[in-house]
Every structure is written in C-alpha cells, then in structure tokens.
Image (cartoon, rainbow, N blue to C red):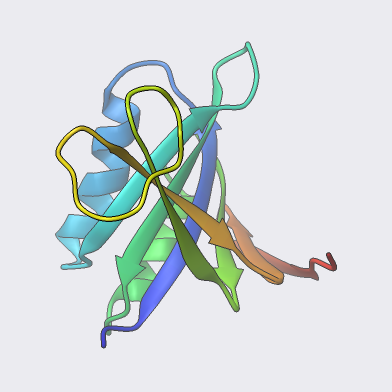
Amino acid sequence: MTQERLLRISGHYRDPGFLERIMGTLRKLWVDVDWINARRVSDDGLYEVYLGIREGKNTQLAILNLSKLVDVEKVEILEDGKVVTYAFDNEGKIVDGEGENKIIVFVPVYSKVTGYSWGESYSKNIYR
C-alpha cells in the first residue's frame, strides 16, 4: 500500500493558472497526485484545494515550494488523516456499489494540522 499525504492548500483563484501552478510544482519534483477536490470558501475568490499525494523522497520539498507560490496563502498537511469516500447518484442520494452515473467525493478526516506559509511552519491539534 502506498503511503499518502493529505494536503489542504488555501489560495486566491484568479485564473486557471492557480491550479496549473499547484500541479506543475508537484509534477516538477515527481510527486504523484492521487485525487484532488476544490471548493470556494469566500466571495473574494479564496479557495481550498484538497489533495491526496503519494509519499516520496521529494514530497517535503514540493510542499515547501507550494507554500511559496503566487496566490497561495498556506499549505497544510492534515496529519493522522484518512479519507472517507462517499458516492452520490444523480439525485443526490448516497449509493454503494458499482455504477456509471455517480459522483465520488473524498472527505479527509484528521486530528492535527502542520502548516506552511512562505516556508514558515506552524502546527496545531484539532480536537473533535
């Protein structure tokens, strides 16, 4: 089984180049992305991008490089995390099993956050 890191990247989406810069930074250092989800957090263009990336020898360097990108406010590693998968049909009901017309959503569940902003790190525990 491949070790996976869960990331949350907060930044301002102004053009499609935002996502391209994120993916390009990871691919430049041969870091594979297993899945990606994004959502708008506020009306001023602040987005959160959730990524599942494979652990490798360049992963930490790629995370530091991501924290220094234009439009990226912070990159957070969701420690002790796992991913819960939900599948929905066309009517919005949760479904199980195989099927063609379904949307799959990956929801990270975690207990600690280690964050980087312009190379500076911080950490905090999340108690639920």
